[in-house]
Length: 143
Length: 384
Image (tube, rainbow over all chains, first blue to last red; front, side):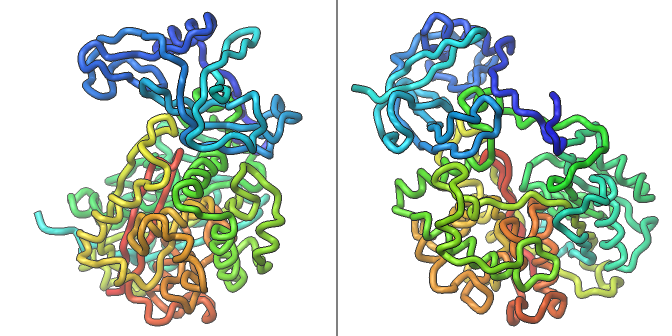
């Protein structure tokens, strides 16, 4: 991890694509599928980030399931300051916590509307944004 | 096993000058704080046998506590780094009491310093937060963002407004204007708050704490031994912790945090209630943190924080003076280390500027809060 001018941890701004537990998630995103781990024992969704054992019952057995991609905004904010050079000309931009219909929550962006139009409780659906090396799940207001 | 309440005391405190300290390093600020603390307690380093500290954010170590102990001429029978973000300074005092109670040490110094305002050329390796790779790809980089999520949700659930948060910023600043060792000493108005630039909506610049250089330390020993020290001992009456989630992704709620259960444990241990508190030094990395903590600590009902902070109630002279030193918002952000030293000074009496002394201060509560609104620790302190 490198440091910025005051010696703070530099902002990566990118996912760790090779983290073993998370590899299937990022691979599915590449195919525009939103997936999560479901415990084979207690049948609950693990939530995120992915991990080796079920956070509810500690079982090692799970399957990756494709989610509906629908969710609800739990909270929303608008960044007016850029902490990373990539966002210098993008402010203000929305960041939301989206609770997924089947369980689990993501930090994500609600796009396709202005930050002021994003409201808590708003139903949203997944939309994928492709970058050269990875694909991010984002959300748009559900029509 | 009997209660630990009242068996251990803070017998020394140290604070460095805060703000911009280009002359200092992270290491030198820790040593300066330890030295000030030992001077206050009138003890030599050779009489201290335990040390607790926090890992420097920009210079992580395998054991910073052991390194620092030997830098300070302390041969520790007990030493460790604690890692609870902004809840660490309070947790250090808790662990000091527990270590002494367990017979591992007799006199433990708890120290925290940081250098975030001016550059530190000391080589080092930054600590990772642990959840950044599930936040940063979507442009969520800052503590201001995490707390803006809580503010946004609190506003949605309870109708709290930016103008309510301003009350906290204005009162805290007023206290800083009375503190000679505070960074921001110019009073602010509601208009200043509302005109300050948006950082992460709904939080504005004046909802955010400072980036500071400085350090602080406290010395803990048994109530029995405390009588041998020159300053009035301040007893640890209650303590608690709760860490209800790690990241924003697994937070059951952002409007009730660890402070609820943490304070319940501390109140029970001390046999005291919110009504007994003469002041509160509440972790204030952002104004919303203070508002939520006042609710979680039972000073008002959940959602009623916006009314509680009105009409001077949280200002010196009011019902519950909050952050009488100026807090992280206006004095300095040393992760709450100075919330503890300030509480001790208020309870000793005659140690702060007369205008900001809480009259007849006998008992106070102190909160620490860290990570993605994840970690929480509480101390209840009292004059013996």
